[in-house]
Image 1 (cartoon, helix red, strand yellow):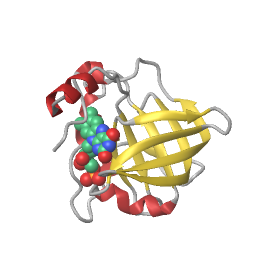
Image 2: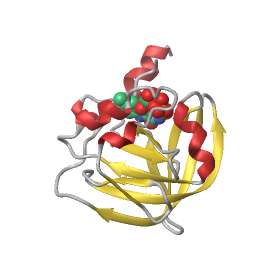
Image 3: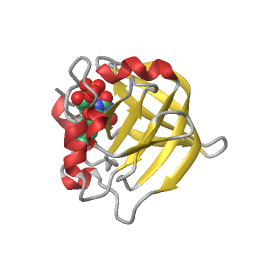
Image 4: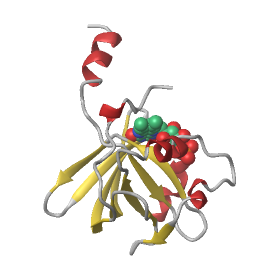
Length: 157
Ligand SMILES: Cc1cc2nc3c(=O)[nH]c(=O)nc-3n(C[C@H](O)[C@H](O)[C@H](O)COP(=O)(O)O)c2cc1C
């Protein structure tokens, strides 16, 4: 079994394309995330995997995040939030937002949102699994979800 064999199979797993917004009180940031899954019905828990080297890891100390599911015509938003943050940059201020109950930001043009409190984090290889308890959720706009079927996929850098 080679790395290519593994990659071929992993490419067959479908993923949503979302923007996770983290941080509160002027220290907000957002990044495009695909490795996202529900992990429990009761309590309602979801998790995502974030590269330990990403800038957006830092404000996770704030203990909340919002998953903004994108629409299938919003690949430009996914592209924007997949850009690496520069120090002092706020990638979110180019888009309309409102504050969620947790204090993290909702992208109001997105398809839907999940507002979460960080329940626990688990180190897993090069990534951190962030497990969040859903404290609020809502469909914001009509449309279909943007997925990896569009060709947008998390690639190894
Ligand atoms: C379609 C797509 C999916 C992505 N999914 C993830 C992911 O699940 N986890 C992750 O850590 N990075 C993922 N990325 C990469 C980050 O969005 C990217 O590295 C970004 O620059 C990190 O932002 P930051 O520098 O503000 O932390 C994905 C990128 C794309 C284009």
